[in-house]
Image (cartoon, rainbow, N blue to C red; front, side, top):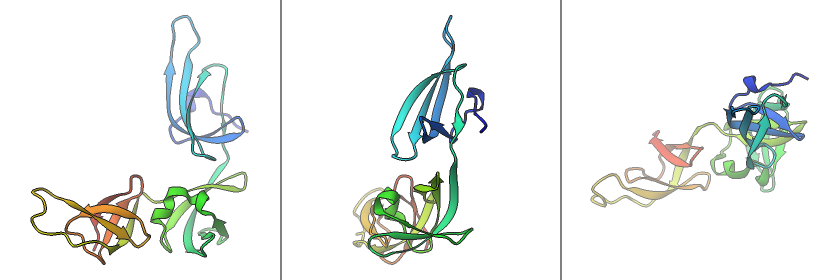
Length: 189
């Protein structure tokens, strides 16, 4: 299998360290006087989500690319115990647990397209689109004159996720939410 040298290392790459897949989050090279240069790599373990920083001697080590397969999939439904997804290319169906989906569960609605990551045949994670459109199911009315500048109020979305929205958002409207930080972006309808 091909290897990746330090010169080819880039953010977002998936590499294998000690038999586990990692995503490169950041890296820096340090040249020290009268010593071999070192590279500090900040990586995220794709199996458990932990972030660590590792230091390597630049001339001694090369990395093996991790065989991570990312497949576009569609969320179908939940039966209470499992969440069912369908691969959009092969039409295979997968069952994921609440633990495998993690925090992404707050933004799952039927027919949403997302990416499922596989490593050595097993599912290791899901990645939602950056923005999702969700309907507001419950929000108290915003009263005129509550604030001098734009104020916010709590709202509950169709997935059960709760967030703060501007006072002009009403129950039944659809809003765009940023899945990276869980914040309101704009009103869609």
